[in-house]
Length: 452
Image (cartoon, rainbow, N blue to C red; front, side):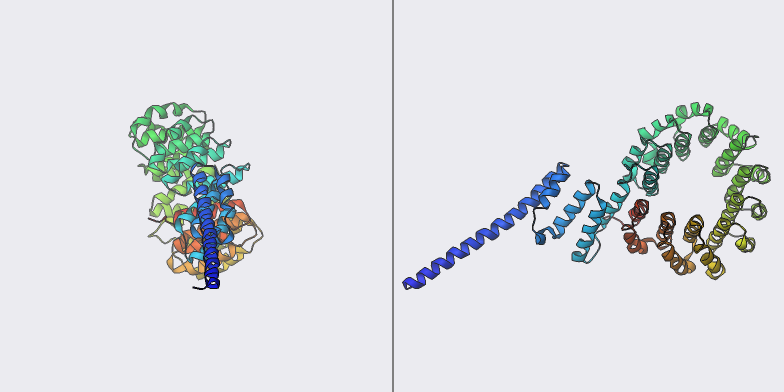
């Protein structure tokens, strides 16, 4: 090799070695930043974990593993919106859903509201957790028992009451000492779902609670546990002159399918107090008899809308009877919310959508948000043959200008479409309203299964 070639060869080797050094340094640095970020994440120092990831160059920061880590960091920092944006970008790379990540993001939109200053938003969050029906929700629901709002604490208690593990929670049982009657009632109703006699010493003091609803709920638990004292008290309450006692007792007796409940309901259906008639109307849904149909048809003409609504809902749940005729006659009820629930009852009965199509369109275009929300809610009762048409109506309502309407539509879409609703629910995670996003997140939690 001549001197010139040797010189050129030496320069080439030098440049090659330099390039390898630079490339190795770059990749080593990249790996180091990701490892450091993961280490900070494991130590729950999420801000430093994010700072480490931000040191990556654009190409490496877009890698799936780096993107997943960033999403999880953003969620721990209480920033589900940015986490969702990063997930959308991850989807462009993967070309398919990542169930584990979308579940974490969905939960993130719920959890971020549990600490919101607004009671309404916290209520939306705990409603979503309550409807999740998963043992994973228990720690969050237990935290809700310490909320400053009695209504929110009651939602948390209701969620725990639906789960065996939740009912065994020490904090759940301790909530029986809560100052709010709603919370105590929710705990007692939870105890009524089990056969755990160990709760009896906790229950008996509640029989003397100043709030009627708490006393009745306590009696219902004891009755469920085969304590005659509780059953006797329930029957006394069901015939009491106090409308509140009577109403609460009717609901408890109906849940237990107690003997003599039909006669109690028939008597109560003619009570002068509307709340008692309404409780009777709701109770008839649990006693499928010709007498119930006759009484409900009469209550469908009650002077007060809430009673007519309860009658319509119960008729919708009574199968094996001719209830469509009276329900069709109520489609032109003078009260718009009543019409909405009549639509729901007919759909529950499997009535052809053509029968309710015109009322659905009319009520969907009314100026009253409460009515539009009611329509969105009852469309969730559509059965298989009606689901496509109901879905079309819901797709319009899910774009309504009022959040409560969108919330009702989201829940109904999830109900009638199941997993097929996931793409639409993901879109709702981008909604401008916090409560709508939390509702969509809650619905997704039930539908998106984690990877094995």
